[in-house]
Length: 339
Image 1: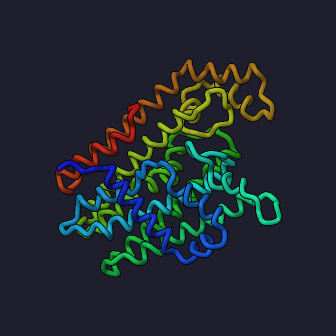
Image 2 (image 1 turned 60 degrees about the horizontal axis):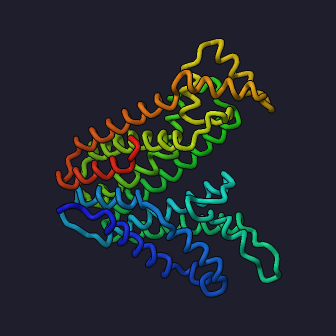
Image 3 (image 1 turned 90 degrees about the vertical axis):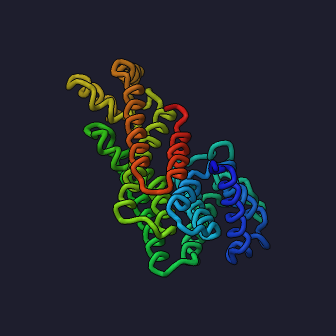
């Protein structure tokens, strides 16, 4: 019987609603600062794919000999709370006013007046609410009704992944200050492994297997490999969608590919332009033409396709239920409509 992905999403949102309704710290906000709570609730329940919870539930169902959907969905909701916390902080770091089709949390909070008629401090409020979501996630992990050893293992994976994600974001910020000249594509991929792949794919895939209690260490390693490969493809596709070929200071995979493909003379021109505080129109035009000359966008898409193919090959090698394994591969493939 095919897995109903939409049904998984609906159940995850039910558990998210349960978490939000039963969190004591949020009860006070809901009672005294209703507009603040409404802004947070609107952000948590925005239209979202719930990729991480779906991956966790599929992984769990692929390994579990006995199904405990309540426990799996509770863990999936905790992962989504962690994800929402990360988005809140990302939007603050990027000074982003929107998250998809809705305002970022800090932007929504900025619009709320306080009782004295002054503008609310959206970023400060959003940071605190984001931290609250993260701690709610850890609390949900601690309440999982499984043997203590498995619960500690799951919590350890979640905390370690959160640390790796922050490390990746820090390394990305340092790279942005230093600039792309001299940076290899492999160096960008290491950052992507930390800030995207482990958090978006490896975490839910491994958690689902750990909670099921049936996966060997070798199987967890294969899940980790599949997650890293899929995460690299995911971030490169995101780069392709967002990349501006005239942005000379962008530090993404496409820019690193360009640096690698350019000749020594072209690199000299690029370095001069990239270190200029005010690049000329000629500099920008030259930069854009090099992208076209070396066909960087197509090259990046080819690399993403290769990573995705390897990820799906690794999924096929897993020892989980054959039906769920097929559904997992199909679901991961569906995340990449342009590949």
